[in-house]
Length: 84
Image 1 (cartoon, rainbow, N blue to C red):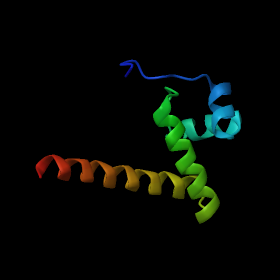
Image 2: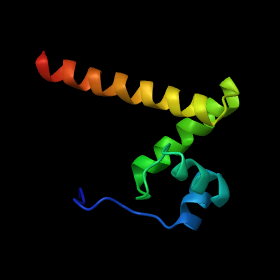
Image 3: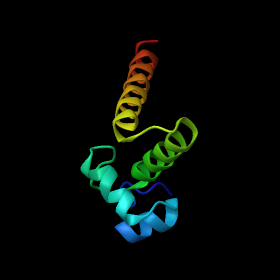
Image 4: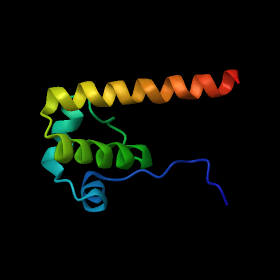
């Protein structure tokens, strides 16, 4: 059954699910890397951010730029799919 209401999480549960500290999650939120509503999309975003941070050794500014560019690419791909 597909529930129309997305799952939301508390800060503590989000930290437990992702393995990212609550302080780091708050920092990412303050810098606009993640949205304030902690849902499944936030889980995916945190996992992506942590992967980029670890593999590319990016600071907050680099993470913000790269995640913004990746989101734009995803949006453009979705638009292209609708045009086909």
